[in-house]
Length: 490
Figure 1 (cartoon, rainbow, N blue to C red):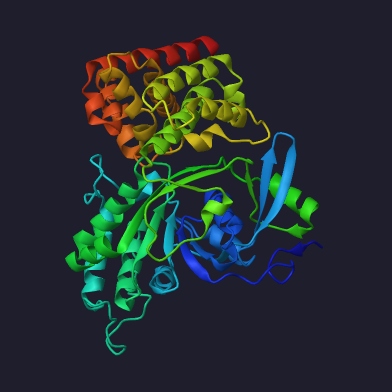
Figure 2: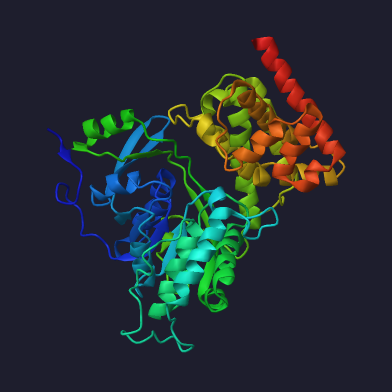
């Protein structure tokens, strides 16, 4: 029988002390931030305690392996295997007591996030959506709980032990990611543990601002004193992140057992390429991620847009247009001349709205084509297509608006949105579920008469776009083209 993977069955260094807390224990974090931390020159000093998002399954599986797992780097000519050791604790995200205790510890220096775009619960104007029932429920819960919890004084001294609550905070935990972090930061404030950095590693423009709006906005709504403490003691670091990480299948689990000689329930498969650009302050320190290839910059917006528009925008275009044309993976869609042409058209528009210097866009585009064409990475279009309403706000809408403002047609970006519209219409007509945080709004829009439905769908993306007759006409015509193409192929 193959031995299970854990720290007693494989030879590895002792677990590093927890100095990083992570929310969002998914494959991307384990292929990206955990990889950079392990490969940092001082990585042995920086252990990660990771928490799941909606479900405990990943934490349960990883905890049974003492946080260990195998990273499979899948290149065009073969696989390499690396035992990952940087995650030293894995917790159910609902265990807010453990989260509070770890964030409150003075040895914890930073919090990283991969919670997905939807989990920030922001309104269209970028502020916290306080009308969201989950957000309001957390505000009510935290107001009640924090009212009974004395904070540190202005000098940063914790309250006397007799009056201070347990670091875990109240018995009930907040439900949203921001609510849980506000609860945990309140525990750090009570403990007098000092400043800390929050590093958003989610695929959205201005992710540092999004994290600040979600966490700071919720704290302000709960308690002005706590909101002020977070404003003065929490640094929000922006990032541009990149590493294609498809879902793990049973085939990878069997492969690791055959190649490595142990039973790993939680391997991660990824491409050899990785990229990480960061911008912001780390008041309590950070690993030497630069020694592992991370880049630190003073301004990050252009790097974010390069990645969001070129890589993620092309991914979304393939996700919708590719599935409409019968493809299942990125490599299959790229091999379709029609999809390839649409990607090129969209990239040309995006490139026109990026700086000509400093980003190496031509080389970046060439590298993306090589990465997309790696058929050994089965990056499924259905996975990319999820939560399109959040993704297209950042991947397509800015490019289309910029092109229209410059007096150009913006057909490439409009085609991306049209493919999404056609994809939603097909799902609605067949009764298939829509995997989107705004599914209820989208279903309601799709049920409207034809003349109203398109504007209602565009309104979910952007109010200005929905009111622009030129944009609406462009999307309408291109969406009809997708429908006609489907009719001809039926």
